[in-house]
Length: 373
Image 1 (cartoon, rainbow, N blue to C red):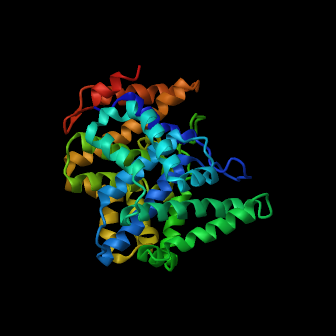
Image 2 (image 1 turned 60 degrees about the vertical axis):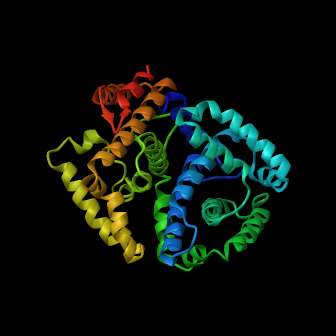
Image 3 (image 1 turned 90 degrees about the vertical axis):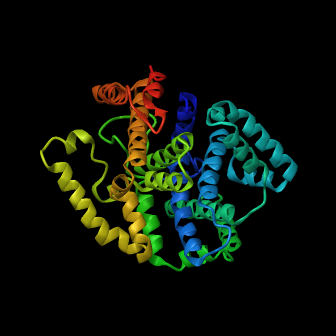
């Protein structure tokens, strides 16, 4: 069963600052970077799927993203140049990853031996198949996206020219990846990635001071990751695990049009919640879905418009339960970190009560909440 230490470890990336040796106009966190990366990986994977590329495996892409996320929660203090230097020495890189595995194993052991073994294999294997190249390309573009913000803030800053040269050099490594070529030539898809990136700057619970802060985009990755892990625990089939992950990853995308409207506001006026959903649906059709190839519309609609819950209410409810769990942990951590607010106390008690006796697909959510006292 997924346990409290794993849940709290996954949240550590919300406090990990990126580019903290450069002038930044906004906070750039590891959680948001990993979330943006997986959105880009989805776009690249969809292109490869449409092209009929052999070897594409969504589970490998999803788990690879989770494995790299867990790796980064341990390697918090290694700057990228040093990390890449270590990677060039295979023996040192394997030793480093063995240390990472030893550090993280006590936390992930609750996920079972097969998952732990896949994680270890991923860390130790340096071969780059299609799925790992998709993740690597997505990682590169998310980094470039961040650097473009930093460069505009301080174009003549120390090291900026050198970083830019390195990024342009790395971009050439992915020119043979057909999905990357298609993506880079599509202005609409780059707009879509930019829109998703804007969710980095929309902070949840923005009316309250909270530590650590989480953005809407970061929250979406947390829901995606935990939805996949709970689906794994529930022994859901492959298609359901994939759908649950991407439902989590995109479930709050409409908030780029409306911002993060908290439940008390939605419920304050009769019919307001329905009006918001109607507005979101209209605007998504006009402004967001049109940026994607038409053949992707139905699937994206399924992820963002509650259609998934209608198609498969059982596992759809699992994603909703995870969404509530992440909100609970946000409030719980705020209280633990000394934030004083009746809203946080109410959120913690309300969600705890809601799931006190709920079991979904064999996952005892009530038992999970009892670990948080």
